[in-house]
Every structure is written in structure tokens, then in C-alpha cells.
Image (cartoon, rainbow, N blue to C red; front, side):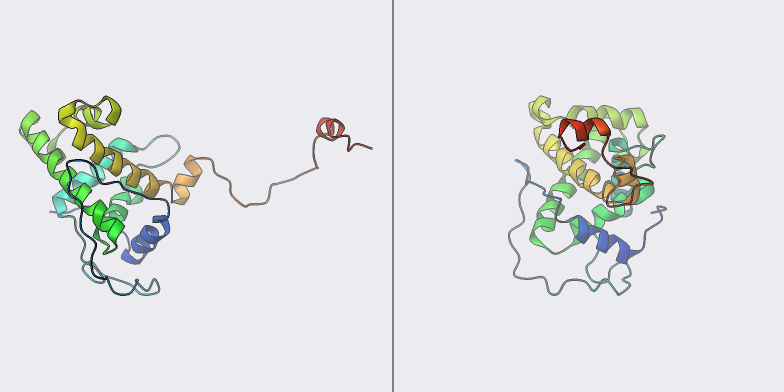
Length: 210
């Protein structure tokens, strides 16, 4: 049973489209690519409210959705400055991303789904249970073997490519939110409380103090 609360679908789709310019998922060796489609219709109307299954069907099963949420939190757990990735519904962002009919997202869908399947098999091989039933330490143990592609063992190379792609999606989703901006201490185009001009020593150095 999927007991993770879902965010508003219109917000998730808007988030997915906004982040699209920043996300680029390569197709990992060992995971097949999806051939280009013949068309995907019109883009979503972001003034409309869409229910799950409308516009385009969502991809993740309840178990996969929980796995994605847990893996997001392995990558970006809560800390003193920001909530965890799952608290910001990054898993909903990823579900929308891999469900969209566009060629780039369809390539990402193949990568993510095959990587999630590998996680389940590896969890069962090591601990005789699914990824969602593992302890935090057990999940971290698996992720430690695939989190850095250049040093991953040969048998983990494809999984390390998946983890790299998943981490990129997670980071782009998280840091597209106001909470992510705050975590980066990004101020943006806002007025400063007060500004008395450049420091005198700077003006003097530039010979503009006369």
C-alpha cells in the first residue's frame, strides 16, 4: 500500500518542466535506450488540475515509489538547514519526470526503472528482503558500492551509472525548490537591507575617492 502523500499533480508537472533545462540523463552502458517516438501530442496546460493517470500515466508502483523516496533521502537526508528530499516530494518530481512522453524523459525512464530493479535484486541477494524493508545502514551499504562510478567494482558499473543518473535527478529536483535555494544560501534578486555604497578602501584603490 502506497502511504506516501502525493503532491498536487499540476505543481509536480510544472516543477518537472521547469527543471527540464537543467537535467540531462545519459544512457548508462548495460542499460538499453528507448528509441525515439513518433510524437507525444501537446504539452500540458499548467492552468488545469490533473489527477493521477490523466495527461500521461504515472510510472512508479507503490513499492517503487517508496524505494525512490528512500533513495532520495539517502542522497539528501534532512539536516539542521533543510528538510529531506522526500519531505519536499522529490520522489513525485522523479515519477513525473520518468513518466513524461518526451524523448529525454523516456530515456531516463529506462535508466531509472532498470536501476530500481537492480536495487531490489541486490537487496534480496545481500539481505533476503526488499530495499524498502532494509535498515538505513543496509541501504547505505549498497549505495556505498555504487555511489562513485570511477571507483565502483566492475560488477557494479551499470548500477553506478544508474545511481549517478538518479542522484542528478534528485539534486536537480531538490535544488529547484525554495527550500533548496535556502540550503544553498542563494539570495537571488532581492533588495539588500541597506547599502551605503562601496567601502572607502575600494574607492581609494580605484582612485574614485576624489
